[in-house]
Image (cartoon, rainbow, N blue to C red; front, top):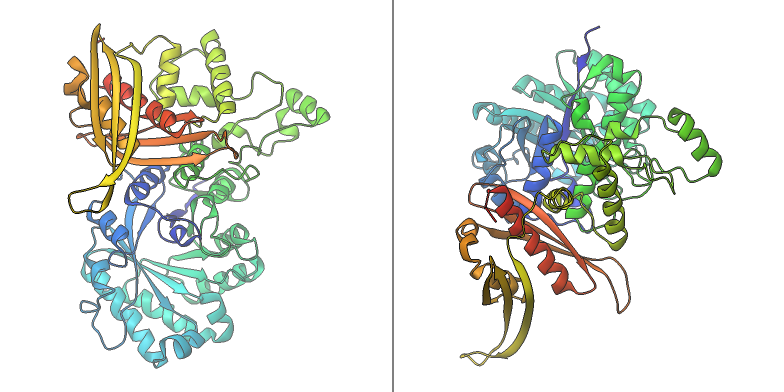
Amino acid sequence: MTRERLYIFDTTLRDGAQTQGVDFSVEDKRQIALALDGLGIDYIEGGWPGANATDTAFFAEPPPFKHARFTAFGMTARSGRSAANDPALAPVLEASAAAVCLVGKTWDFQVDVALEIPRAENVDNIARSIEAVVARKREPLFDAEHFFDGYKANPDYALECIRAAHAAGARWIVLCDTNGGTMPETAYAVVSEIKAKLPGANLGIHAHNDTEQAVAVSLAAVRGGARQIQGTLNGLGERCGNANLCSLLPNLMLKEPYASQFETGVSSENLARLTSVSRLLDEILNRASDRYAPYVGPSAFVHKGGLHSSAVLKNPATYEHVKPESVGNERIIPVSDQAGRSNVMARLAEAGITLDPKDARVARLLEDIKRLAARGYAYDGAEASFELLARRALGQVPDYFVVESFRVTVDRRKNEKGDFATVSEGTVKLNVAGQELVNVGTGNGPVNALDAALRKDLGKYSPFLADLRLVDYKVRILTSGTEAVTRVMVESADGKGNRWSTVGVSENIVDASFEALTDSIIYKLHRDGAKA
């Protein structure tokens, strides 16, 4: 039987950025966007060009997507201005994006009180704005803000708004549950009615999670006729968040009646990467993953009870509604040394390392990972450090250099203007192929100074590092107290567009940073084929 296509629209980088405590950098957005594209997401909403410096910079250099349509967000033109002359809309229309999603009012109360314009004028603004997107040869989408509230209050007007958007050329009409208060049965009924009244329109759903039902509302909308589902990784979003794609995708792909009736752009192979993408986002946000999150949480497939553990060992389906590996997670049975083997094999394959699952080195590597995880290491967001760990276990990483010692000092003194300034100086003593080197570097802070010193002179390896640069640095305190353990994540890049992340852990932040920096250099040397 031919399955109908569902389109997945991710708004993590725009709606998710409205989460309290979340502040994406341009590099954060790029890394998340590429991970989403790797999953097979159809639309990735990058933000609102022109609204802030971060989003403007992000759209100035779009990520190199292989699958997704890069989407710019904005609002419909204001009254009294043409779409081209609206200072808020013009940068959106000019952005380097394949699609443009414009939000507009569809609730008469909002038009009367918030916009304070005639209702007919709002309808005209919607139509003119969508026409402007069409004229720019971008794919137009219309987010019908507060649609469910508007349809309840004045169905004729709400329908008039989306009918105008559709007639103007909107490829998708997205019905938004903006305040998150719609019940699943209401969502099903309303979407069904709109599908009947506007049969030629492609409908989408954008649900918020204020009643803890955003996923249920989204699924109900699909049953009612919506064929685009909007959501965010890990359910990020303002207030209580948005529909969680980490739950929606497995439900759509693994659960009936959806699995047999519909297909998405996410393959089964890519769905197995969902857990790592979820945890990558948490690492970027410098926060712990929700242990009890469905499908992707570290405890989602943990079986601690004795009776449960025994039953799972005999028949996993007894207490697992899906196979953990189908979403890239792992079954954990405390005291079992088999937990996580399949996940390690998948990570090895991603790194281009082929091993027989029965190879004794796999078991040793798994034990190493568990031991290091107990100390605070996390490899979901540090793929380069994981690959080095694995290759070192296989004897595939040469000793390019040996760090004999390092030192860093921070000196606060007055400069020539009489103002206090802080100067950091790092000293690294190295042995490179039998040659003793002592490097000194200064920088903006101790980590930058050590990085400068480490790379100042690496003998015959220096040409390999000429284009290496540090693009992101994150610190997370894992334990409290005077002996707190610190985890440092470093993202590096080179002139060829390659990016990779490394991790270091120590009670000393400088030591953890130095470990991550050293791993970054070794990874580049090995990847670029430097000979020991």
